[in-house]
Amino acid sequence: MFVGIVILVLNVLRSVSADTWHRLDDALYLVDNTSRLNYDEAHAYCLTRGANLTRIDSDKIQSFLTTFISPPLTTERCFWIGCHDREVEGQFKWLDGTQVRYDGWASDQPDDGRGIQDCACLWSSQDPNRHGRWDDNTCGARLDLICQKGVYNFTLTSSRSNPGSAYVSCAVDVVQGDQTLSPNDVRVSVVKNVSSTTSIPYSSTNVNGGLRNNSFVIDSIQDDDKIFCHVGKLARTERSFSRVDFSPINFYALPGLTSGPSVEDISSTFVTVSWSSWIPCLDTGEGPVISYLVYLQTMDGEWVEGGGIDLDMGEGDLQRRMEFVLTGLEPGTEYNISVSAVREGVGGEGPKGPLVSVMTIESGRRFGAFGKGNLLWFLFGVSLAGNILLVVVIMITCRRQGKQQKKKTLPNLTRAPSGYDPKDHQYEVPGPLETGMTTSMKVFREQKAA
Ligand SMILES: *[C@@H]1O[C@H](CO)[C@@H](O)[C@H](O)[C@H]1NC(C)=O
Ligand SMILES: *[C@@H]1O[C@H](CO)[C@@H](O)[C@H](O)[C@H]1NC(C)=O
Ligand SMILES: *[C@@H]1O[C@H](CO)[C@@H](O)[C@H](O)[C@H]1NC(C)=O
Ligand SMILES: *[C@@H]1O[C@H](CO)[C@@H](O)[C@H](O)[C@H]1NC(C)=O
Ligand SMILES: *[C@@H]1O[C@H](CO)[C@@H](O)[C@H](O)[C@H]1NC(C)=O
Ligand SMILES: *[C@@H]1O[C@H](CO)[C@@H](O)[C@H](O)[C@H]1NC(C)=O
Ligand SMILES: [Ca+2]
Ligand SMILES: [Ca+2]
Image (tube, rainbow, N blue to C red):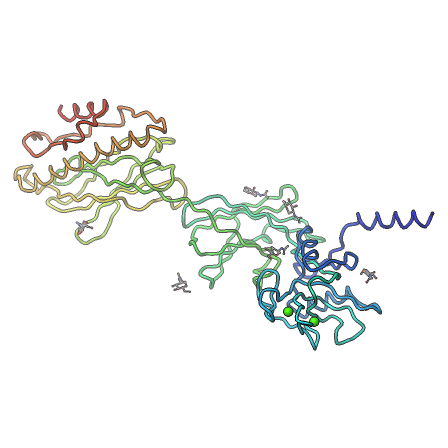
């Protein structure tokens, strides 16, 4: 009776007592000789402990683990490890799918005994040729097991960024046994194109809830670069337990304008252009847009920035026309003009939108010759028609979004050059648009006529 209670108490104590993990470098190992599980159960047993069946890929690990299964009992026992050839007979792999290169096999193993041995275990045996060596065994056998997990419990966070940059943070328990992690111990590195690795200095660090939490700003990153966090110096091998990879960084799609600028006014040295503001339902990419940049291309093919417009907070959501005057141009010269939208954050500039071609007036002449003038006004008319079409499309597309079209969204779009009567020239709004006209477009036409 008394003995029974003692055994019961001992059993209860054993079942609630914490697992004993043994540390070697950056990994922890659990040697279990009581559970007696088949291979799949053993794997699951490790998984519930945040671990895997162990990988053994060095003499150091092999002899370290052998100390916990020594001295051998008279009845030999084998401990499951994370190595198997269940997929292709004879091709042993670790549970993470990588090939087994280290040779820890007993001298006559693996032998695929009776053609059914696919799962590996580590012998505790009085036979010195077997003790501390591996054997392939029947996966269904109930054996002992060894689990393995990393020392560091990394918590990674990353926030979305514009392509080319990344904001990440990495947190690790600040107390590691008898060691306390300093700010410089938690690092982030970037592997570029699988070759060069750069360590990034942290931008801020703190200790919160027992975690050393470092934040990093990575300002030049490409899609296929790999970012990982590690403790201490750069980990030597891929499988090191002192590092963990960030999943692919989530980039914003940069805003793109689907329609190009239109020409509002031309002189010999300046050109006024206008364009529809970037809006989510019609243009590409993601907002919020905080500014626009206007570019000029000259005959030599070079694009130069001609200036830009910064929006006030929250203004980027408004649907309206933007207007910009490019100054200091050469008279009688052909230019291409294009606009890009810029979203918030570092590196937020989207691609240049469609371009418009203009020819500045030759000096001394002011709309005198009709050759080029007509062409320009024709282009003007076409782009204006395009704008009207765009306004219609915007209104149809965006109506659901409940954004009110304000009259101020159509500023004096039609500043005709002084002394010039547009009615004298080809300047017709194409017919079909007339029928689809709305109030604000009538306002627009009236302004135009004025
Ligand atoms: C199981 O492991 C413990 C701790 O290493 C050891 O004391 C015990 O003798 C082992 N039991 C068997 C049956 O191997
Ligand atoms: C266990 O192995 C899987 C791959 O099979 C891996 O993703 C996971 O990180 C490993 N867990 C530990 C604690 O090593
Ligand atoms: C790792 O840390 C996370 C969050 O800090 C915690 O929820 C989790 O239980 C930890 N895992 C282990 C195995 O300690
Ligand atoms: C990256 O590597 C590929 C081939 O591995 C090579 O073609 C490419 O030029 C490299 N890019 C850079 C930026 O080094
Ligand atoms: C670490 O800091 C970053 C930025 O301050 C924060 O977003 C993240 O949640 C923190 N991580 C942890 C695990 O506290
Ligand atoms: C304008 O763009 C067109 C088409 O890309 C190109 O053929 C032309 O040379 C450009 N003109 C100038 C002045 O850059
Ligand atoms: Ca086999
Ligand atoms: Ca065998």
